[in-house]
Image (cartoon, rainbow, N blue to C red; front, side, top):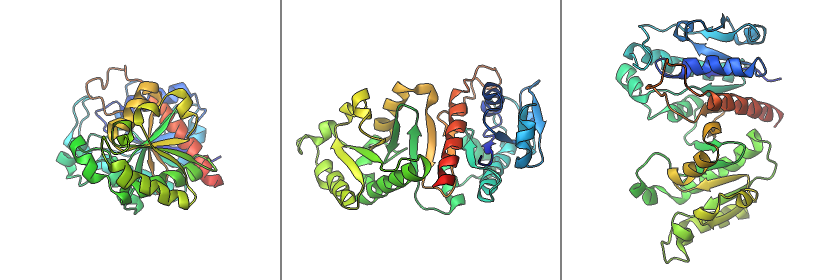
Length: 324
């Protein structure tokens, strides 16, 4: 068995605290994990066991949600981020990474953060979780994957306007995205010989250049180059025919060219169970595929399914990486 999963608290005023408790209730001790955060931020009446080290997680798990305390300054009001909490949220992420790097935790599972609250309260210098984790891991390039039991999909470009995608989509970016995805499938998903399907950028994959030439001039040459290195790549494919059931059976992951081309299929096929995975880090990181949901925080109605799936995937990836 690998070390337990470290679940970070995320934005305390969001749904993270209540989802941690509900995940523990649903999992009934079947998956070792602990919350890294302030026990005082958890819902009133929650069954909580404070632990002094990750090693104490297993003994505590049957009695309540194991919490490795990280005390925060300032009051908590669900739905209203407190700037005084910002530095604590950042420090929890860094602490969780250190626990994994030192072998005390098997993976990091991150509850959602509120980026504006971190910027306003602590001058957070990163666009989001992923960039901060890359800095903590000492790597320059990472890849975002959305994964569920029905589909794994990677967008080559992510949070940029659609009009900027053609300029951002370079041969180097696509090449590194494909290499990182291939390596992660081998190391973290136990796929010995990954099959990757690569989407085109334009409708009908450019239709021979009539609807755009990126497929001919950029995507196809990168695919041919990496095929020569031994990667199993199909494409460039028309994105509108890649995601039905029989097509999905032909590949282990799909690489899309932009955000919505990747996320619309998985959110349509498996909305509640999608997990955000950061590939290319020297440690494992997963996250539920939703935000802080400030509008429903503290109301007890948040759905824990994505958090549970993120914990489960983190545990499976930890086992795969340990065996690699």
